Amino acid sequence: GNIDNYRVVGGVRGGIQKQHYTSGSSTSAATNTANTTPTIVLNRATIAAVQSQLSDQIDFRIRDMTGTVLDMSHLSLTTLPVDFIDQVLTVPLGLTLITLNLSNNNLTTLPITVNNLTTLRILNLTSNKLGTCSSEIGICSLPHITSIDISKNDLTHNILQLLLLGGKGTPQLMELIANNNPLRRVPLELSYHYNLKTIRLCYCQLTTLDDIDFTVLPVSYTHLTLPTICSV
Image (cartoon, rainbow, N blue to C red; front, side, top):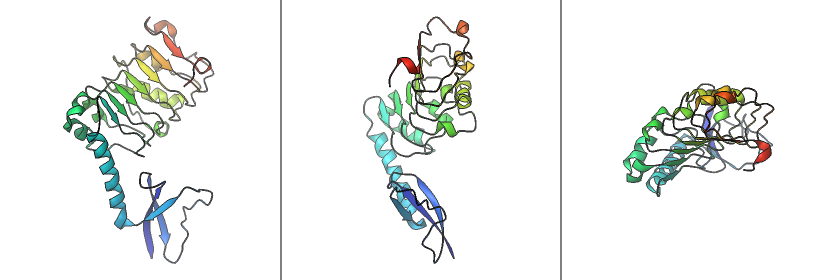
């Protein structure tokens, strides 16, 4: 018969991938002989325990937050739990949260309910998978955000365009950091965020700035950091 198993890549904090096996065979069709990453084969009876452990880690991070910063980095999250925002708002410090660190995960989008974190000002999404999104995800549509870091997300011009369109006219956004992305052009939609003062595009692949109409940018728009003049 056939058996559905799962594997955890890089330990229990890694992503869970479904594997399909045929009884009598010790080789998975999805096996990559060149991949030396340690794997643990799980069956249906243990996958719930792995998911529960991740849930416990998320709960601990929320309850253990200090000051105005919530660190949710390095959890291999592909999406935020449905009740994540509610969990944050149930702890006292969640009501004064300013910085949310979601770096080094596998996120492709954020739920619109993040808007309920009305005190949130700084959002770190470095090293995620935003470059794989196929629809408008509106990261910049968060009305209270003043600074967003979307570095190392494999963002192309088209994807960044979707991100910027998601927040057309966002009044609070003052800093956009998009270092280490394969950008060749900067979208015209940049000018929609009329309070932007700092844009960092270090270590991208820019070949032109012709898409930006600098005449429509406000006087306060003073700091455009390009690959040749800054370091990360």
